[in-house]
Figure 1: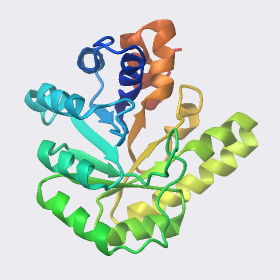
Figure 2: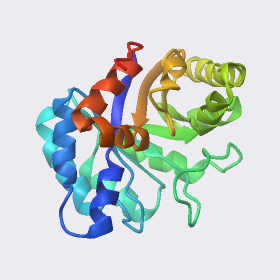
Figure 3: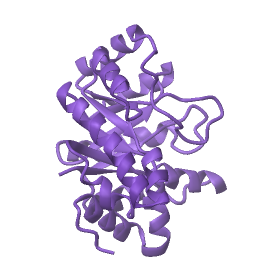
Figure 4: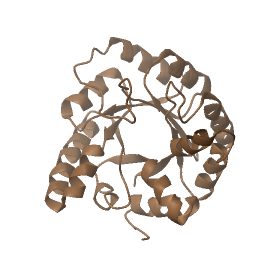
Length: 249
């Protein structure tokens, strides 16, 4: 059964919109963990428009006594300051994500045409430091195999296209799901674990949680939006149930 990693970026976005300390990211992390989530994800952007460098250190300190029970996943592009941060914190997992200048959120996975040399060295360094490396890719067998050549241990499938297809109805959802299932099978054949994330929610998880070989889903925006209506603890509970295939609502 797949696990849930809760992305807490949106808590920091709300805090930063007003300044000050509230809502406190670390308090949100505590609620998420207390509700039973086995993972916390952050994506520190270079402009620190949500998660800040200090947040990463604070979360790492909070999770240190829970090592082996709650995983810490840091996402981001392999820019020097992000790499240095990851190497200083040594999270359980680092997910390498391509970033386009000016983007609001991730728009695509890595291109399988990108040269692998520099990323291969980076992946090897991280793995030598005990960090599992996942690579953010589109549900394309070429991209999955490219990630395998980097020496990554997992891929994270970019799921916005599936979410848009799901909104169009059952036929479109099934067709898109088949594409993701094929990518997951290829990843499994390549010896890669399968993560997924971007625009997954309580509705489309009804199908996506059945993806073959699925190890982890990372969910932030939809979970935090749901929390506005039901509270953060209940939102985590609802998403844990959805990921397990037993929706509570």
